[in-house]
Structure formats: C-alpha cells, structure tokens
Length: 318
Image (cartoon, rainbow, N blue to C red; front, side, top):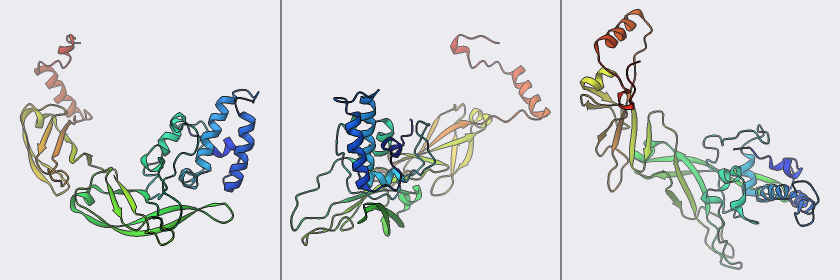
C-alpha cells in the first residue's frame, strides 16, 4: 500500500487553515475537472484531489491523518503504525462527496472503519440530543479475563476561531467488564457531545481492541498458545508445565503427537456465558547441531531410523 501525501496533492502546508483547504480545492477542481481540463491524466488527478479534500476538509480525518507524522513520502510502502488510532475520539466524520468506495487502499485502511462512516446528525433546533462520540482503546488480555479499571486518554480534534485544527486531550477512568471481546463496545452515557437547547449530552462509545500479547492470541472467546516442544516429547509423550493467563498448569502430551496438533484445556479461555477454551498448539523445536556431540546424535538417528517425511509426495530417499 502506497502512502498518500494529501498536503502535497493539494499544494498546501501542514499548518494551512480550513479556509485555505477549501480555496485550494476549488482552484484545483476547476483545473483538473475531466469535463473541461486539457491536463494530462486529468481524471486521475481529479480523483486523487477529491480523496485528499475528503480528508483535509474534515477536522476529524485531518487530525487522524496528521497523527501518522511527517516521516512518510508519497508513493513509499506504508503500513499504519501499531495502535495508531488508539484514543482518537470522533463524532462521525461521514463522507462528504463522491463515491468513498472509489478511494485508494490507503484511504480505506485509515478511514474505512465504522467510526468514519456517515452518521445521522439529527434535526436542528432546540432540545437536540448531543451527538455520540466514538473512540478505539486497546486493553490487555488480562483486563478482559479478570475485569479492571483503567485510566484512558482521549484526543478530540477541534477547529479554533482562526480555522486551524487543534487537538484537545481528556482523561477518563473506565471499568473494563470481564469477558469483553475485541470489537465490542463500552458505552459511557453523557460523555459525548453536549446537547443544544437543553438537550441531553450524547454518549461515548469505546471500541475494544487487544494489545498484542507476547504469548497468547485470541479468537472469539478462545485463547491460543504456540508451545515449543522437543522431538522426543511429541514422539514419546510427556507431562509438561504450560503457562496460561491464570497460572501454569500440567499438560499431558500424547505419544506420537504431530507438529500443529491442538490440545484443549476446557473452560480456560475468556469469561463468557459459554466459557471459552484454551488451546495449546504444538510447535516442534529442533535442537541445533552446533557441537560434535549433537552432530553425532543426528548422524545416529539418520543411520538407525528408517524415516522419509517426503514419502507421501512420491519422493524416495535422496
């Protein structure tokens, strides 16, 4: 995926006001509109301009884009930094023009998530309920298993009176319920946008994601561990200690187990109405032949064991 420099596309500096963004778009839209332009690749440039304007004219999308930093160059390979959108609070940020589905993979990767889809901003007038806000937060696996209280920091883009996009920060203490899964939401009533004319404030919806864990991965309510094992443990069977989020347990490996075999510890996954399970995935680790003794052991195995792992492929020895 290629990085898009939206400021360069529109001929703007990063400290341009929102009014300057609008003026630049109007000027370039006339220049590259396919119906009137004689410029080379006018249609492609007009499409690229529309995508850049879609981002920079919206304070929320612009603030999120700016969060990626200035160390990227147009056209170079790009992957969003891990957790780049953590704690970024937004209020809808719907698409304002054209077919958003026709925008680049870069745009879709950043803004194709649910928070940036069009939303109904409601009627105008008195006693209007405030708009709901949304943010994505990252928690540890252990927070979901045990439940916890966390202090989170949120960043909210706002436009000041001079037309510059500024980011305001706030902190909240929130309760993480046991068993919450990635993709689920925590709703904080009254923590969204203020209402108008005496209307109630909107709510804040926090989308849950898990931090990367050094040992475990999660699928729905199940937890997986890739467990290194020796060749003799899987061949002969063994009883070993296995780490789980709630402490180590004894696990029996059946004789003649294979690479990738899954062993289940029932009910040791995420808390839920139907409790998740804990799966151990066997990963055979070979001892290195980095000493004369180790080499001799491998040579003896080669001589004494009639074993060809490629036999099922129709490949004979050598």
